[in-house]
Amino acid sequence: MKYQAIIQEIEKVAPLNLMMNWDNSGLIVGDPNKEIKNVAVALELTGEVIDFVSKHKIDLLILHHPPLFHGKLNIESANFKPLLKKSKDIVVYAAHSTLDRTHKGTSYALAQELGLNVCKFLDDGTIICKGNIPFGVLLKKVRIKLKISLKYNGDMKKKHKLIAIHSGEAFTQDHMNSAMGAGATCYIGGDVTHHQAEYAVAKGLSFIDATHVRTEIPGIKTVYFLLKEKFPNLKAHFIDQKEEYWRFLG
Ligand SMILES: [Zn+2]
Ligand SMILES: [Zn+2]
Image (cartoon, rainbow, N blue to C red; front, side):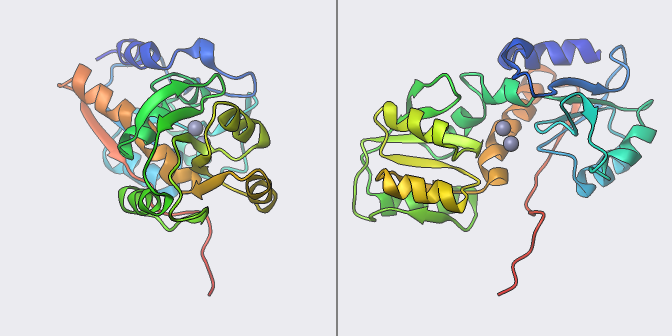
């Protein structure tokens, strides 16, 4: 299978013209004329991904987070160095803001994973879903579906008519304002900081932080399912990412 044929299918869902100007979606390294037999899909370039790529002789690696930002090699990413050495054997492609900003992208996939009914897509990638279940029930649902400890704030008994979903780095004031502007009173995303939580509480916005990684896994996994469906003869793998870059000391 040709690289171009595979990428064409991905770009039908996550077209490059949706890319933000700070982003580096698209071909990262490698030969775009390469014949592909073995593809792996992962959220980002971790040590585990590098090991997997070598072990399973992967020709094409598709990532959500590009290891290159602003057009420059992110040399902070030590993981990238061994991969660069292999760049004759492997092609690396990233579907980042292209997948975050498409209607059926990362936030949509998260809503699907949580079993919520999507009713509106906002320009900034936030998705508005129908709610009407008590916050406490929603919290348990997120906990069970995403298998993650949660940070949250909200009245357990309150029913929210509209719930906003934003995968990944979600809690900027702009994204929260756009969710509230669309009528959402509850917000599910990743990566809340102290002052963002303070802002949400001040605005009366209930929230659930289910981490950057766990809120984006369903989105990049849809690329894996797409490849399985369109190219049944291609060997496709999905590499899950459970660990964070930190540990907790109690
Ligand atoms: Zn993302
Ligand atoms: Zn992300």
